[in-house]
Structures are given as C-alpha cells and as structure tokens.
Length: 319
Length: 311
Ligand SMILES: Nc1ncnc2c1ncn2[C@@H]1O[C@H](COP(=O)(O)OP(=O)(O)O)[C@@H](O)[C@H]1O
Ligand SMILES: [Mg+2]
Image 1: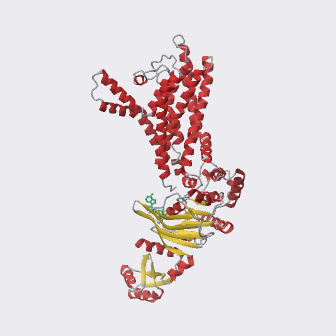
Image 2: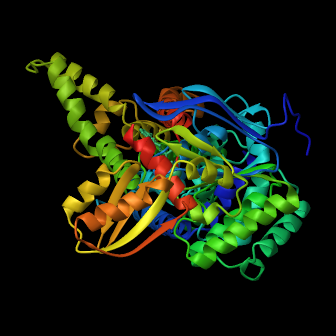
C-alpha cells in the first residue's frame, strides 16, 4: 500500500473541527491528534458529538469549519484516499441479510478493487481471525448481534486499513461479547499496528485497551490523556465517600452540603454519597453525629474511571 | 461503479421479487397475445392484412382482456417501482449505507450503479418477453414478422423500457427521500396514481381555467388541445400516445383518439405509415419520456449527494 504522508506523522487529526446544524453546535472547534498505532478511546455521553466527528473523518459529513485529516489526507477534499486506508464500523452496523457472511465481504473486497484471489485469502483469514470461519457461508440474517459485530471487524480487515473507526462497537453486547470484541481490537492494533479510534459512552468497556482517552461533552473535548493522568488530575481535587447512615433526612443532607470542601451530595436508600476534598472526612462524621443520626459505616474510594467520566461530563452539562 | 452495478444486477435477477414479477408479466403478456391472436383469427375476413404482427400487441377484448400495450401501460410501472423503491431506503433500513459509502467509491457510483442495474434488468425482462411473444406470434399466425414489423416492434420495445425506467427513477427518488422502504413504496405508488388518474383532472382544470367558455367548436378544440398537452406531462399518456402512433400506424389524430369514449385503440384501420414517418411522430414523445426520467433521477441524485449519511 502506498499512500503519501504529507506533513507530520499523525495518523488522525482534527483542526478546529466544527459542525453546526442550524445553529446547534454538534462539534465545537475540536483539536486532536492521534499517533500511528495508538488505540484512542473517544468517550462521551449520547449526543456529545462523537459520531458526527467520526463521520467528518470519513468524509461522510462535511465540516462547517476546520479540517478532518486522516494520514494527512483532508477527508472533505480527498474522501476516496481516506476511504482506501480507513475502516469504519458504524454504530449498529448492518449487512445484506440474505447474502452469506462471505458474500458480504466479497462485495466489500470488490468495492476496494482487491483482486479476487487475494480477496478470497484475505476473507478466509479475517473470518478465522474473528472466529466466524465455521459460519462463513451462513446468511447474515441468522447472525446474532455479537457475530455481526465481529463480522464487521472482519469486514474492515479485508481492506487492510491503516486506521479504523469503531462507533460504539460494544453497544447491545453482553459481557462476553464485549470482551471478545475488545480483545480483537487490541490484537488488531498490537499485531498489525493499526491506529484505532473507539467511540463509546461506556468507559469501563474500553478503558483496558485504550492508551489515551478523550472525553467529549457538548461537542467539546473536556479531558484528554491516559487513564492514569485523568485519574491523577481528579484525585488531587477530590474523592468519593460512601456513608451508610440510618435515619437520614433532608436536613442532614443540607448540613453536609454546607460543610467546607464538599462538592456534591447524593442519597439513595441508606447510603449518602459525597464528593469532597480528602481532608473533609472528619467534618462529615461530625455533621452526622450532630444530627443524632446513626453512622453505620463510612468508606471512601478512589474515583473510578466511570466516575471521572461522569464527573467530566456532568461538569460539561452544567455550563 | 462496476462492482455496484453487478451486485445490484445479481441481486435483482436472483431475488424472489424479481422471479415473481417476471412470471407475472410473462404469463399475462403471453395471455394477452394469445387472446389477441384468437381475435385476429376469428375476424380474418375483415382484418387488414398489413402489420398483423403489431396487432398482436394492440388487440384486446374488453376491459378484462386488455391488449398487451394497455397491460404494459397500466401494470408496467410496477416493475420499475418494485425494482427501485428500496434502492436507497433499503440500504438505510438494513444499515448498510454507511459501510458502503465508507468504501473507496464515489457516492454517485452508488445511485448510478443501482439505476443502471435496474434499467438493464428492465431491458432484459422486456427483451425476453418480446422474444417469447415473437415466437408465439409466429406459431399462432403461421408466418414470421416482416422486416417492417420487426423494426416497429423494436422501437416499441425501446419505448416500453424507457417508460418503465421512468418509474424506476420515480421509485429511486422516493427511496432517497424516505427512510423506510414501506413509505417509499407507498409514495411511489401515490405518484403512479397521480400520473395515471389525477393528471386527467388536473389537465381538465388547467384547460377549464384557460378556456372558461366552451360554447363554440373552436373553443372546444382549444380546450381539448390544452388538456391534451397538459396530460403529456404524464409519462402514462406519453407512453399511450407514442404506442398508439407506433403500433397503429394510421393513427393521425392521436390526441382526439385518446379522448374518444371508445378508448385509444378503437379506431384502428392500419395502413402503413413508414417507420421513418412514424419515428418523426413519436420522436417528441421519446424525448419527453427521457427528459422526465432525467429530471426525476437528477432530483434523486442531487438529494442523495448532499445528504448526510448517519446509518
Ligand atoms: N442532522 C442533524 N440535524 C440536527 N442535529 C443533529 C443532526 N445529527 C446530529 N445532530 C445532533 O448533534 C449532536 C451530536 O450527535 P452525535 O454526534 O450523534 O453524538 P454521539 O455520537 O456522541 O452520541 C446531537 O445532539 C444530535 O442531536
Ligand atoms: Mg453516536
């Protein structure tokens, strides 16, 4: 495969990338560079602009402003060059139901002008790789969701891409399905050096395989870095404390909210969850005792990625 | 575009939908021709001897036994609609459109490939049916068609394919605008109803509006010609006029015949107009038919090229 690399060595880039829909800003001046071979977690709640950004990288949607680049190719001006080297697994991917899995991939290969012989080999290899070798000649109509998702990965492998975009690849899969898909993605990157972008609104599903994650909220990237970096950035700011209290009431919650260093208070059944500065714990206990409530236990935990993520995006929503 | 064309073509030819359609059309077509041959033979004494082969296409026996031309004019559009209504909407509802357009193909190759594959399929179907009818005609009438007759039949074949391809375009247009194939099918059937039936009312209203007072003969003629011209925006009527001219080569006052209470093919006393003369008469119809198809497809094309693909 010979594709000229223009400047730099970035596999995927966004420069002031912006998309507006009649005044509504779906992606807002996104700046991002993803290195070759990197597995990047593109996170954010529903509606935060992940899909829109991916569509712009693939030249399927035109940016209102800014540039989407894949291996130096501007996706708007040179969509064909981009599509030659990019694989795309859309959100809830579909296939031609009354064709077999193999026939579906043969069509993909033909659209990519891969010679028949070479295509057959590549398809055979890819189907084995994703564990669908046995059912290659079954109609896709009979495939489960997990099988379709893996077929979609085989589908992008056929064209030997340099970068792949997977939009919510774990959506609707059970835990085992999620694990298999993530493992395949990890192998793709490790064995073939493919650059991967995985979008997801479920952080814990992608965090093991992603070297870096970026968190989108309302079209902006509100956090970017390795999982540890994001954890540290937040760790200095606060922690979560779970307190089991018998007989709490609204007045107690109000008291807790007034304590210095407390950022957020939530309650459900017997538990009160408080986000606060680390040194605030004694004051919390005092507040509870002052109200004559029974403090059963108090447990602080580090922020999990899920919480980091929740925090970033709720923070984004507030604005 | 080659890959898309061949995929669509094999899809069409291998689909149950297509087999059912082909069987329906071939059987009905054969039946109309069979009835026509019997009618012609029963009336040998009065029948003109020229261009008998063409009369296989135009002879019907009442409403329940329409002629082949009438059959194609009325039911033919459904072939086009059936082939096209899920062209784009089907890709969307199966969620394959995004994957398809993420391959290194130009977007217009997708819609062009589908359109051309549909048109080629229609051509293939009609060629097959015409060959069957030709063979049957030879057996039933007892002699082969003359060169003239073959030439007229060939032009009729082309007109039929163009006519049905227009409806393919209509269906593809609907499939671009509507997400769900069911909706796209309903809308294209609605357009068929409009062009077949409602156009008559529309044309009459236009004529009424232009010529309010129809007390003199001159005004009536003007009224009639305005109505006739307005109806030429409907491919159904374009097809009808073109085929009347083509298959009943003496039809001179096509427009008035169309509006006659006995129906368009009632006053047939064929005597040969040459192919050349006939072509001069149907040429505008062909151009108009192609023009309407181009307009329809262009709208579909532009819309599809601009559309954002989220599925
Ligand atoms: N065609 C459109 N017209 C108007 N708004 C749109 C359109 N497509 C997407 N949006 C809006 O853009 C925002 C971002 O959507 P999307 O990129 O799909 O988010 P995500 O993939 O992160 O869930 C959403 O609020 C969505 O409603
Ligand atoms: Mg999305």
